[in-house]
Length: 529
Ligand code: TNX
Image (cartoon, rainbow, N blue to C red):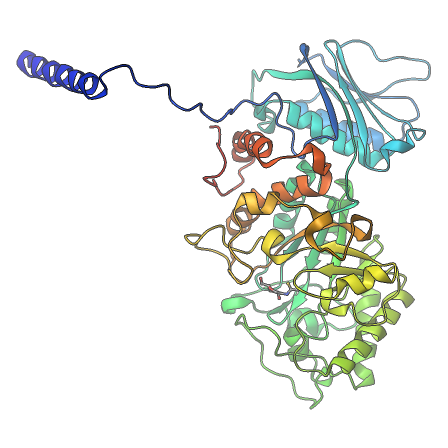
């Protein structure tokens, strides 16, 4: 025993001597480790932020969230949400100040000041001082975003709401923040594979953490129809009965969809429903024979080809059907948009296609909604308030020239279904491999030379689901690229850089883990544990 220890010592000292001999002198200093503790790790980075490191605010069991007098029910609800974030169900309830009362020490005060018009709908001012925190916005949306900033200033243990003995401290800051773009979206393809309402709500909560404000739901495609339409019950019953690979599919009942919409609304996220047409419609064609020119339904489709299906655009029944679908969906969302898809149509002449888009636009308008279409729709005669969503080389610029607005979803930057690198198992690669830096390091204002920033409504990251089955798959592809896109959409271009972003993002690792998010640990990011 002793001998073997001595032997080990000998080997060790021989080794040390060898290393010293080999180097001849002390090792040169190692290159500095990437800085992994930035002064703050707020994502998206605020437009203006000043740290006052000595002014730490500590949340303890006496800290109270208070709402300024007259701020209204929405502000009170947001205050309740913040109190819950701080302490879970056992939280000290948020409290409204009575007229004339001012907030005492150890409070986090939320107030609305509509006169602060420079903050816009979504901006906020946050001051964290040693004895109190004050959050002011011109509208409830801004208060909600400010609460997400408070959440990110607190340590990740805040995400374990039930945990005991958390030390919740916030560094002193003064922040004035508002978004660069009004449209900061994410899209879920629930057609190729179906995910239930609970999964969608979980995604909504993650969007909210990063101040995203649109959830575009791609509700129908060749492989599945995912929303109940009372006047056309076969759409869900037949069209919703399968998915890619032949699984059971599924659809949202009206009650479930209403639940998703209400949940999104409570997180200040606008639901954008899409029914893709005239192509990507095999599920509808399989459900109603009269939508086919030959009056015969094709079988349900569970592969992943695109471009082969189309509604019969020369039959009046088709437009009656479009009207039923648009009318019912319009009634299900309080928000102003209806997305008609319009991509990848190979079975119509160009003229037939454009006339169809124009008729659908009339139907959408008659049902009180604003139409959105993928880039292919731009050459049609679109109203200036119709929105075009760019995804690949297209004529979106035509729409800007006529005074319209464009959402940018460029495939090589924002397609969350593309593989990260050649070893990524999930996903596709037609738009290229998209590492986190590719998703982050671009400027919407210079992406398309013909479209200046004034023609842009914002950005959106689509998550197509041909290869995604479990919720973990969705999260792996979306995170952290969607976080990168959130900063592209929110923060001023001059205020952001890849080097600073990757370090802030690195500090979200324990937070994402605490939330149970199955994110991709990109080698480009110096993740903290
Ligand atoms: C293109 S983007 C599509 C989708 C596919 C996606 C896969 C767009 C408007 N159409 O139908 O799911 O590529 O990446």
